[in-house]
Length: 246
Image (cartoon, rainbow, N blue to C red; front, side):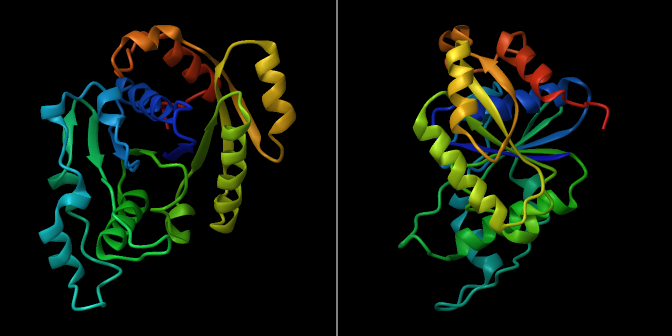
């Protein structure tokens, strides 16, 4: 199972990605959890202490330049990355955490060695690794090429009951369509009432809604860590009907 999770910042996509990781891991499955959001919080949600988290791959400048073979403006678009998940991740139980890090761009369409390296790394993990793969994406598809996207079995857009998150979902849907992603759906988070549910259903068109997760205020007191006994996690498992025996 290869799952990518995205959505506007603050909607709870990291909680969804962490929840899926924990659900699969506690069922005995090996999971690679990849934080591809520059505002990296997936490790914290999974209970990794700061000292236990891996160094962001994008900060391994010397190795990236060696692997991409940069010479002036030219570099390899398919560098060697098959050893990266094992060498530069950290493990806790059945979870292997990998942080992609931030790529500083000179322009919106910038292609640089770091960007090419991270895209090649994500493609390798999706296509060649046998573990469950859960990726916490940023609000877009920056690291996904078409071949990589087509290897994703499920693409989840997380929304909450406000117009800006639904507008972001519509833009992501368009990007996913351009990449020929096959299975794109929505999980609605922080739903407090029937009015919230009706608002989402009315204003979100052309996307399948997997389900609605209520606002779990107990998560506000966990300092970013997702408790395995939380109501949120139970609701997520029910909403997505996770098949842990796959």
